[in-house]
Length: 277
Image (cartoon, rainbow, N blue to C red; front, side, top):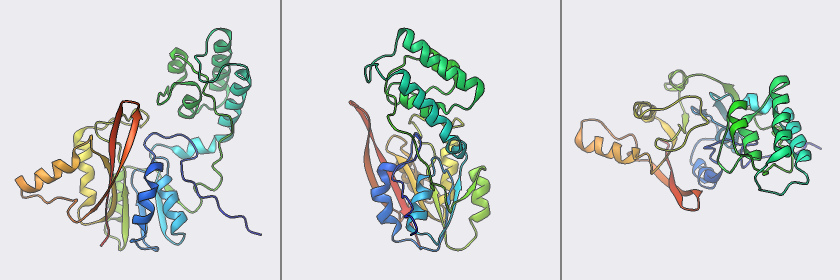
């Protein structure tokens, strides 16, 4: 009997900005799109949107632009699981969610150092087990200086089948867009790092010009576009449309929103705009 393929509702490894909470709006919106279209995930991130499209439309071509090299983290998932399992053993008698101090802290740092010297360390995933919520240390030197907490994961990570059926590439989104923009029945998934929102785990720093450049891929195309109310991109496009000869790329698009909580006193609104003609 053929085993049923697992459908992931969250990225198998931690990734800031993944769209797991937006899937409830994304899936029904996708129903108005073609099951045989080509879907190009220009800012693939964790690949969750690409995975979701492929799981709903198995016959569609789905191109996942893994610019952040998430696939490398997935390939090393066994090493990550072993490291976290060893930390779990070190911390087995240590209070949960408490600051790690003294000899135990030295043991944790020593185990991470060994892996740094001899193997592979996924610092983003590791951060979720030994740092305070939403904090990331992306190197051993930075991890060593951080205050550590025992929030170690109690089970291993699994990414079996996550990238199955996807065409995985890694290139500048502009080059990928140029390759597909003139082909028939193409849908672009456009989820750039948010303007005015923490993006510390992404490869590069984005300025306002970069965000505005992205809007060019929405001109006359079918798309899903993600932003937040902190970026003011929608208001800017409305201003451009009324004050200049330029058009608004969001004209005719459908909007869906979701409240996102950062901590107990900070939140913002996630926004998804989509258009299919």
